[in-house]
Amino acid sequence: MKEIHTDGGLVTLGPTALRVRQALDSVFVRWAAASGAQDVLYPPLTKVADLARFDYFVNFPHLALAAAPVDTTGLAGLPKHPAAPDARLEEDQLGPAGYTLSSAACYGAYLGLAGERLAGPLALTTAAQCYRREREYTGLSRLLGFTMREIVMIGDPATAKAHLVGYKELILGLSAHLKLDLTTDVATDPFFDPNSSRATMQRLFPVKEEFLTGDGVAIASVNYHRNFFGERAGISVAGKVAHTSCVAFGLERWLHALSERFGGGWDAALDAVLAFDTSSASDTDPAPDTGPTSDTKPAPDTKPASSTKPATVGEAAP
Image (cartoon, rainbow, N blue to C red; front, side):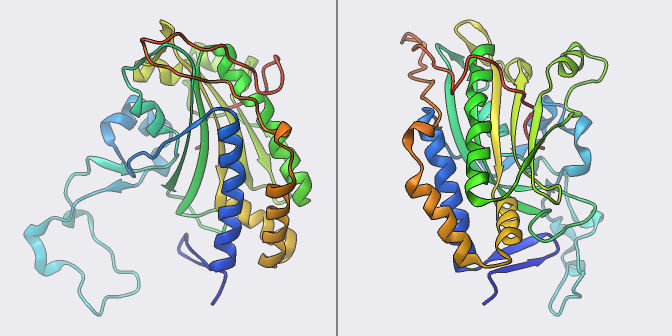
């Protein structure tokens, strides 16, 4: 069977390609564990009202995909076998959509903590099947449905920035081992109103930095959201509005990079990832920077990932 099959933005992974993706994710999970992140799984759908809270339909309406129910009052007109290859459900065959398909993994973290008063910083990691509507889909580099691993920090400004510092070094270290020759690029993001104080701060301190392959595909990013999600979700840390940051990995885009690097040789790609996973020293992992966060326990001292200087970081994918 084929190791990679794509059709209309959807991908099927064969056994070896899937093992490569699992090996990559195990590297990212180990990094998350080393920084004290708890592993969490969030719902696959997001309420429209919750995304509206984050201005999603103002900034990213072109990416949104809704989960709409089928209107059963017109059963006779619904597609039947044999259906045309481009068969679809038309607008008048669907009911109102109260949910959307997730387009990023980290939204669940902020919604899951809505209204929480944390005693100290909290690090979380999650993986999600994500969906984005695009003008066109291209192999593994631009998919309708894809897998995203994120490592999220909720804390004070210094902790949120420090969370990201070591990850840039780790990502570049992994790419050097795999000979991917990544470059970094500071990106602007439409997430903030261009006339707002946040947009002004974004120009002074960029909020998104991407890691790009030679053909311009962003396979990872480090992102600093300031207090946006803390304000909108009502999350506080030690009595103050939470600042958040995250590191995002597009797993299928890493497969794209490895396919280009190894000419589609998935066994060689797997060997290279496994060699990194088994030989990389633990002292290259980010230092733990979180601990218990209940309101009844004191917040632990936090440690920066690898430096006391803030990284150049950015808003979360998308």
